[in-house]
Image (cartoon, rainbow, N blue to C red):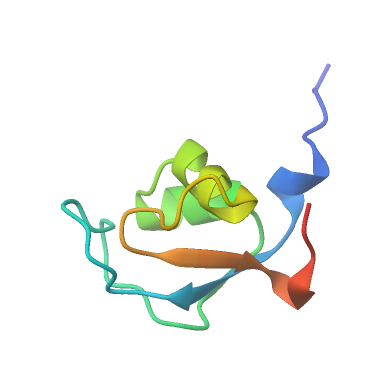
Amino acid sequence: MSRARSNGFAAPIVVVEVGLKCHKPPGRPLEVGERFRSIAWAECSTGIGRAHIIAQLSGRAPQARGVRFEYLNGENK
């Protein structure tokens, strides 16, 4: 039996800012406008931990390893 993920994990996200001051940048260079179909895809592709991405998206952190993400279409899950 598979457990369903919350909508926040499945929501598409986009990179809105890169190159912010950070002691440990993402595993690969990212570009503004780069899209990911979910937080899990962004985590696998960038090497930035899911918890860091979620904290930044929810406003608890200003950035996630030098990158700012937003929900695509301005959705706020």
